Amino acid sequence: MRVNQTFRNISLSGKTCIGSSLLGASLLYALPAVADMEAKPAVEQLDTISVTANRNEELTLDVPASIAVKDRGSVDLDQANYQKDLFNSIAGVRITQTGSTLGHKTSIRMPSNTGPYYLFLQDGIPVQSSGFFNHNGLAYTNFSTAGSAEVLKGAGTALYGSDSVAGTINVISQDPSLREGYTVKTEAGAHGFYRLGLAGSASLSDDSSVGIDISHSENDGWRDHTRSKRSEANITHFVSLNDNNSLKTVFAINTTEADQAGSLIGLDALKNDTESVGDIEA
Image (cartoon, rainbow, N blue to C red; front, side, top):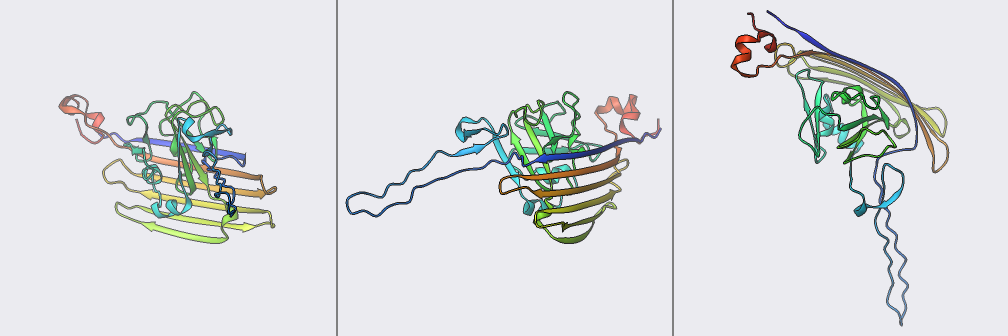
């Protein structure tokens, strides 16, 4: 008996967000020292301040959370083909790919699991409705064409959604205002893997620009029933409103088609549940 299951997902979303980010920031202020024969130079240092996901300024030591950021340089270095390639270089974050290749489990401050403890975002917008959790949620983000990524470890606030118990993961598309021109990329590897990519941007005016990122990959898999196909596309429009505000509009779409490999758990399954192993004739 031959069993060949298929895992599919399609994610389509149009998103608009105004200048929001999980990125932590620090502020350090010092008064200039004044040379005086009768007084010692005076230096005043303020406590470190972080801008957390609730957009309120709080002392870092008082916030039970840790924010990790992966910048564009790190993303280019890792060349993510799977979710783990984008996030496993961040301390305290472990993504494990499942038998469907592009399915995954997440471990942030918890053992690897499929429970509803994480909030997955694309450009600050949740990719799943609140209360309807799929542990494969990162497959709904455009991780292969990401410009950067942020991970908020610990319980999140209601600013982005109420589902963040152990961590929040934000996949951020590339900013077209930070690049110019077009790039074509090709990759190839073992087991029939290849990926084609197109990225580019153009300025519409001094204050606005538009960018596009397209990626398509296929892989025959390292064993039977692990074949996968994935396509991603981003169209991003960026407008600088003034020195303190900007408007970023993102249209993101991705499709995944992946075979589901079988699994063998114990001798009893081999004898009595041959369908579970995927490719054994009864």
